[in-house]
Length: 331
Image (cartoon, rainbow, N blue to C red; front, side, top):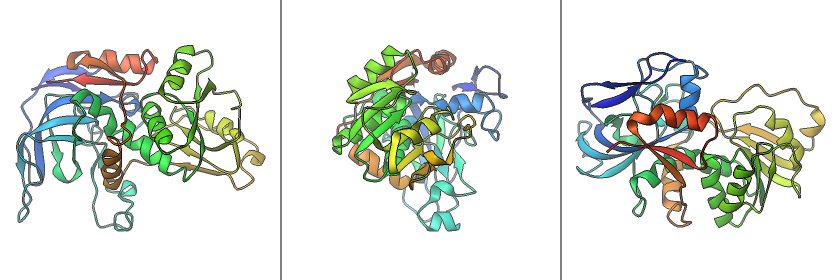
């Protein structure tokens, strides 16, 4: 099979030929159809996430066709041959620790992640734990389904952490934001988009996707916010968001990595404002979001690249050269 491989951080991905992987007990072998590109992939390439499996096939928003499954002893297979399934970031948890038993498997200390500690979907074949795969909803072609598996899931969990907030500010209008704004509007919330200063294209995209107002991230919104969701990996947005939310409001940081947060006066946190992060996702998040997405319906804006142009997709993501999500088409 062809695969894009990272041999060490700060080096370009290499397109290589590898033997097809072999599934073990409880795993499925997938023919990868598409894999969306995520900013987390950049954090891994840049060495900002420090514990990758090396060499590594990145990619954790996989849509594939089941070629084979090896069921766990005493268990029936989860999927039929040819079934279309999605593989998300969360690839394994222990199922026994206090976090797992409390329904917070996203915090499991033994968790392993697709495209980070488990080879991912920047390849023609992939192996995944069948328990952590999701059936793809009908009506979503492969390319449109792929961004749902991280941008959609993390966006959904981030929105859930905002509670019942009506006026939502979204900082960083990329892949996750363009999906979560649709869910928020479907739920009857008001959305205010924040983009880089001077980025008129991003401002227009935010308005096109459903924000009622869009402005620079250093601008105050036209109304006090009940909550703010931060998807851009820029720590300086945290004080800006705290200043934009009302007393009792919530700021949710949705990324896995963020630059250092600058010091800020206690006064902008005071008033029972809440600052919190989102870590990974749970399978329950996946089940809920993938059931909700067709009801909205969530529409994904995708920019398509062939597998061999994965480096170009990552570069374009890094430099903000497209709106929505980038997706590698594999088969």
